[in-house]
Image 1 (cartoon, one colour):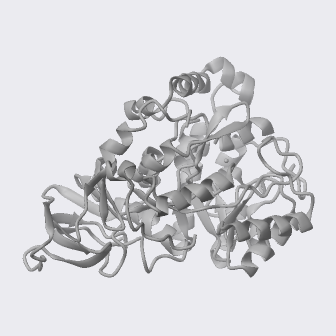
Image 2 (tube, helix red, strand yellow; image 1 turned 120 degrees about the vertical axis):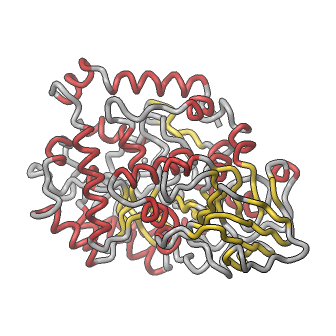
Image 3 (cartoon, one colour; image 1 turned 90 degrees about the vertical axis):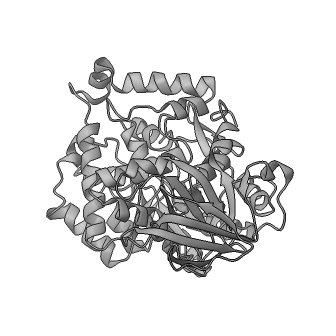
Length: 481
């Protein structure tokens, strides 16, 4: 059972970037709007603060920044501005993806770096800033960040996470296994010197190793998140971790059979689905995380894939996948709903995932309602049906299904991530003086959240990129490069 859950969750697992001085011809081919001054007129503004949408607004962009946001009837538009009439469109802040890997599951515990396709899909989906939240090839991620900053390749601004901080016993051959606290300290220090700005602890890390890693990271102003198994959420919070990935479905502290410092052999989703969010141990865990100001990153899309009957796999996802990746995904989805497979895997007549998924949503909503900081990501792993950009949009839709209003869900996926990264003064909401990282959407996602998929133009640092061109450029590629 433990191997299954590990496979589920990883097949499941910066410093402020410089503005490019010039764009390469390759990047220029995806540019839709580029002028010293740009006016988005008659547009609905959903500013990311959680406030109500404002109709018929004019957003003026100048030299990569938002110069003004004002009512359309009184707006002052520079005479030299390129004017876009956006009747029927909405603009939201660029999404801040907080669990947005650069790799994809290739099968048999191996993960491939998608350095070509994923940056394009993140940007196309309206994701203008990402935290990689675990790197299989950290040098590749660091070099990719440099290329994007120099204007040599299209993509979002990247906060590179160091290589997984994993303990002995990992299933993944691409992960270094820490030998103890000294190794954890050395690893963190080394990768901070290389340019990463955050870390992710993983499933078999020991409490002593996590303590050493957190101390070394905090000494340099870096943060540590974790997808944990050997350590429960409350213990990790007491150690000083800053963030916890995935939520309730990976927290092992509630299992009576868990031993201290060990990842339990059995992870029982039916057991988890019966926990009471309103009282008892789970409620106490929520209170503890809120009091210690530990964030939780929601990754609902990767869990949804394991619920029989959902989601309907969109054609745009199938079109983006390579033939091999597409075939593997469809085969995995069939197996996830196969009655014989379910009986063999879970020793039950029905899958526990539907109830567990519902409980995860309930946990995330209650955590946020209690004052916790909820972040949003996609985790493009699992069985391969969650891919860059599209999965980030799906995450926002699922937050609404979990009980958040569309405005709240957009706030979680924009402002909350920016605040956690220490960049809320620059990105995350739409306001004068901030960077012009904006997503132009046909429709009104404040009323119909599914409209968040209708991205047409993505502004990053005031340059508008053509979403459809970026998507078309990676047709049939995801899963290979």
